[in-house]
Image (cartoon, rainbow over all chains, first blue to last red; front, side, top):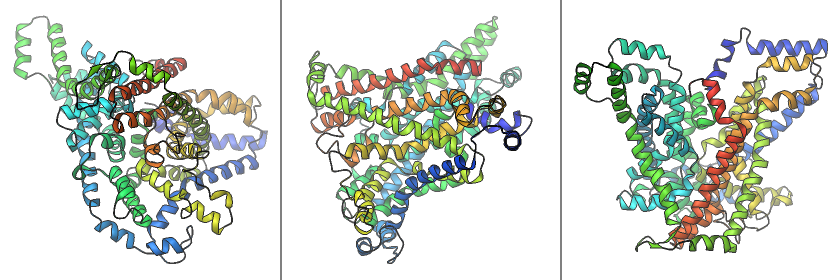
Length: 311
Length: 318
């Protein structure tokens, strides 16, 4: 896992990297060093980095500001500066709007269900795959890796037909199953990459003590896997919370409408369709749980987002 | 997880050759541990993939029976100007997205991998788009870009920046590029993470050696940074290209493929044909093209770069 390797890199290098850099920098002052690493180039990267920051934050700032306007203020006040009066009316409207509360509940249930299924299955499968006990595990792993390359957009029509046939169309647990299946390849890959780092000797020691696969699983693999469980949970939770396409294809009624669909419906034909501040407040609230997670569990969150790309 | 202890004990007592027992035991454990995953994966990924391919040779409107159609859908796909246009738009979107995202993300990743304190703050703020769902950020951008009342239009009217008051999503000349920019806004943060991790993994000794050899900043970029980032570049490029070939959500929410068919990518085309016109056979042919494009591209890029083999040498186990 490259990601863990980088995190631990300073421990492997005898001198902390920052000190090496500082030394290199001071040397570059005295001996010339890398020419061109001047104040100008440092200012240029600061400027370009700042331009990107403005581009990233400007629309979000706009959304935050608009969400604190009343409909009249939205039409009359400055669109980019907090002058001309602020209001909490959108947020009180959104709490009273029909369907919003159930959208949150449905998304929450979907996320929790998906996390439970993905974590449990990837843990059990990942353990058996790293043990490499049989051809079955090797073939399964190959198939799962191949699954990463299959775009979900290419199979939505069969998924629609299959969920109909299995009578799980338009149900939350049907959505949990399909979403979990779409997330499982990356989850298994993350799990396998992590569990590989468990020293073989620990497994041997368990075996010498007479532990069977089940005991080894509960007493060695599960405790060792705890850090990667957080990452996989976030990966699965985000996938469930934010997915738009699968709910669009696999659900239709209001009582299992998840947030992304709910927001879309809200914007296109709800009672607040023309009330932009309320719509922005809705988007803000839908992102709030993720903001809390990001602030609280930044490192796991970033790895969870990165999936296999940040191994 | 395991076969029941009773079975295992009987095996141990009965079989004197303990290796066979152990092998059988681990096979049962594999079966118990992996089967649930394979059942789910098989039912909702493998079977649908095969089913999509099969449906592409049929005519089906969901309610009625499935009729074999031979190559009719495929002939239609390759002769229909609409689908050929969609194919072209899809490739354009993938190409432009790559140009917009990968170099930007590389520059930003290298930038935030630097040691100055403010860069860490920037790095944290750069990730904020990842907190918004695609639906959420699409609606946000819709309001920013809305003609007359949106944020940019306001600047055009009140700050005399007239070039900003355009119909960004409604004009056939602009909609496609606007979509490219919004997709970049959504995904560059993710790719920045890839390059930041890649840049941090380059040993600083390489730069010290380069500077001892008298390399200037540009030379050390071309001869140290870029070659060292090759896996990050391949990972990022693969994900951008495969991702934008199959891109759907933002386009569905913001333009529905319009205006005209300027943003009608294959995924959008498939959705229209399948779920609006209920021609599931033809839609499956389009879906199969999508799937094949995605899989082939992923495999080619991974093979070309030797990305797969890197895993093997690095871990020493596979």
